[in-house]
Image (cartoon, rainbow, N blue to C red; front, side):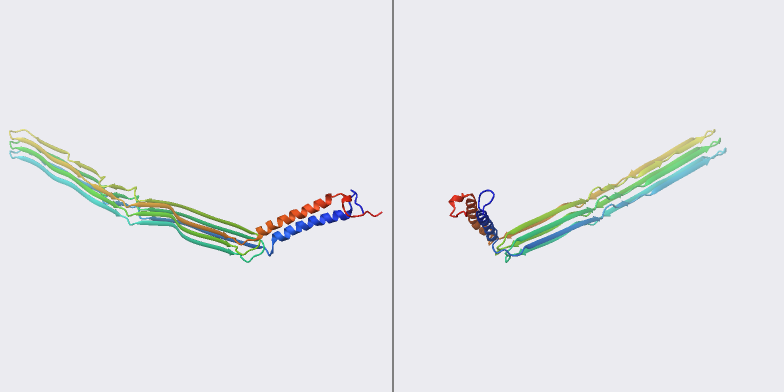
Length: 356
């Protein structure tokens, strides 16, 4: 029986079978004692988010914010035409005394946005598997924290008073007699204003994120005779924002507004032979004092404090599929070469007779 290209069909079939036999030997031997498919998928996700805010600041203290008024209005008049003395006398003591103190003492402010302790262990034991082993291990740790601490922003004012002291005096001595004429004004006008402010803040401590991540991923495929595919991913994301403040304080011992006035008018008039005396005696003073002290605690801010430990182990020492595949390679090449050689051999070189 002949084919169209002049080669017997039997020769073509024999050569094709040799090629197929080599390919089958490659597939069977390379797979070894193939068993079932083992698929291991392990996912671990830890997400820790924290926001913390603590405040002992933003305080306002005013020791003295009063408004004080002290006024002396005096009018003395001595008149007449007789021979006696004419005397008009004004005597005034006008004063303001204002004092105050302000104290702001804050405690400590501590904020911790996120404190996380993540411990992840993933283990895949496929040592007795004889087929394809596909192990996928993913571990994600996300730690986010925001912390704000404040003991500052305080305002302390010892004295913010408004003080006014006025002495208005008018003395008049008049007449036509022979006696003396005396007009006298005496005023003592004063303002005394004092104040103190003390601000003492505590410590401000803020930690945005404190994380301790420990991740262990293990694929144990010792003794497996098939193909082992291991994919291990470990991601650690640590983010933190810490803000701490013990400053921005304002302290004012004395911001008072003080006024001391002593307007005086003295007049001695008239005819006659007597003495005429007009006297003004005035003392107007302002005494204003103050002190301010600001003592701040320490401010400490830590955005992120992380300790990450990742361990990934793929133990596949006893895998035999690669050695088995390499051992079948010469057999495959030999089978393919024999098949191709058989197909290309001329008909007359074969020990076969053609039937007539």
